[in-house]
Length: 379
Image (cartoon, rainbow, N blue to C red):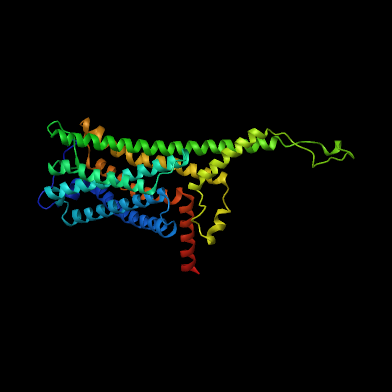
């Protein structure tokens, strides 16, 4: 079976399980479970962003939009699997269904990745460059990208160029010299755009991690320098000598310290993107007392590194399967294609988890939500 062939299906598709095996069927079930979990987690995220944080800032608005696309993608996946199971996967072989399957799959997925990319860019500008984009501009930008994705996706849809993939779960556009040039352009643009999005996401969060790493380094260095500049003396050498402490002045490099304090003040202002300074309710104020800036930034760095690794593991295999493997005519088995599809279905869960745990204010609201409901249930 080459990279574009699909398993043979006879009659109404009863040979599906025999052809693909239990491994692929297990991944199908897991993807449905992931879809349900993604919907629940994203609904919780939307509740926190709207009811608690009131969608006041551009990053919370973009996080809300990301959750909407995550829910749409997961809902589409659940409906798609339900139809495939009811029809024993023969529905994917029907031209109309396979074409709209591929169209919706790639349009919604493209919108989801675009919104994640914009969110990372907004965070980078706000944290590293201290540039705040207006809420209206961010909404108009994401609406423009959504419109572009759905209109641009009509090119292969009109020409029936979405091909059923080996896993018999979805359809995709494939590069072929025999295709119309517009279809090949769509294929190239689609995956180049995805690659650019992933580079922007990785790059933005990488620079954010560098920003906080440098802050930690300077913060620790400054604390050490200030402690070393404190006067040191032996009480035994003082004898009965009295000192006028009111007139004693220590020259500790006032200009340098003033500049460093100004830099620290600016960093603390930037840290408002992580530390909640307005949205946290009075009943939750004791949560913040448990965190120092040092511990908070270290925790943020760890989450950033974990997020970068997870996004790479979820995106790179799919990119390789759909581009490098197919362009090189490397055979793609049903199992390999199913693994790629499974990794993509992890993204709608990764996105809300990152929103909930990366931002200190959303993390505080999540903790408060869990504590309150735990108290109601068990007390």
